[in-house]
Length: 496
Image (cartoon, rainbow, N blue to C red; front, side, top):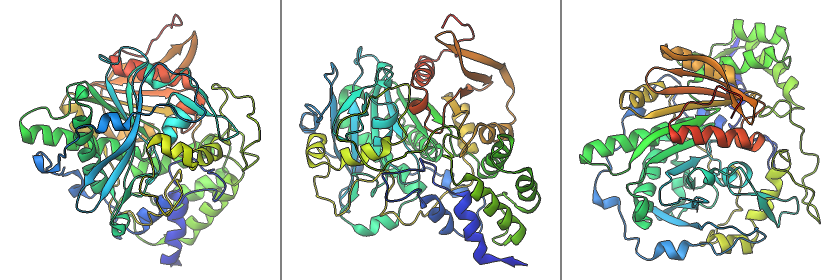
């Protein structure tokens, strides 16, 4: 017997948010990914219309930006250590009539800011804030346990680039719309369009970066955001017959690429790492259909296997299967001893407290409209996701054909979008190998493994890293991004 109502239970498990399981304590996990799946049309097949970029190569989307850059300059964040680089934060309007505006945080490079590239970072979800990337992963600071003070990240990516963090779509973090119905209209297509309009206007505000080499990076559901924005850039450059944005490449980590292989790879990984039983894995393989055109009904055998698997996951962090769980949902009166190399599993709580402080928001030039909701790591007000395709592989092929640099990396102890998922997804592309699988090195140790394919695509693993690679392996992540931006292979000798 099959039950359509059980289908949504299955999708809830399949679509655990592509972000950290533990937030500040209000909830243990996010359900946006479930919501975007449950509100799509019944057929979850490939929607080829999602590969049609929006024509935005006109002046109507560009707004005056004079004087706004200096207004966005952040003098100093509360509790931050001294720095020798400039940082900015503020809003860029992406739709004047709706009053839709995106919040950004920007850190210039520690050195050579006038020559190093511009790198955009996007977190996933869908619906999760890229300030997570700024404060818990690759930004110049990390948070102390008191929720008041910051300490230096010596492996910040602004040692390699000028780094721009963007909260999108509207309803994520500090980004907002004066038209509340906008929060019910978010999806892949609108996110790509708004992100593009943001960039065009941001470059008017920061004109010194207009012709700079530009790269897009991100993780998790940004496996959709990053390629879709890249395609929009390519399309509008071609439409305008000039380079509006000087895009050179993309890099995505533990990324949602191809639903069918992503899901199969997740359960193969969990079984091979002794987290779910062989029996559960056998039942899932036999009774569950992950294909894009799968029926909207699911057998009870499949549901039963999923429930068994879920019980096995209840007491671990699926985003880093070997990491400790957070033991307290409170900040501390005094900062605990902190280490960049040893990620604190309660960091999400510290970030929530810090970003909801009025003095922090004032310093960031954030929450200027006095939102009715708190800043959240993953949005509470986006309750629908209008469109999503089951694969972005056609976009990767398009980038390779257009000469873009494409790198995909995978923290090898993430259980949510694990290395097996990414390997299965890449295997679908059937790419000829240029440089066979090899270990790459950082500080004389194996940093991970890499393989290079013809067409300028590199796949790299990062050893002992979870879903948020820079959080768990900051030195290896910095080495990875440096080589990506330089266009040089990951080193195959212990001298590095």
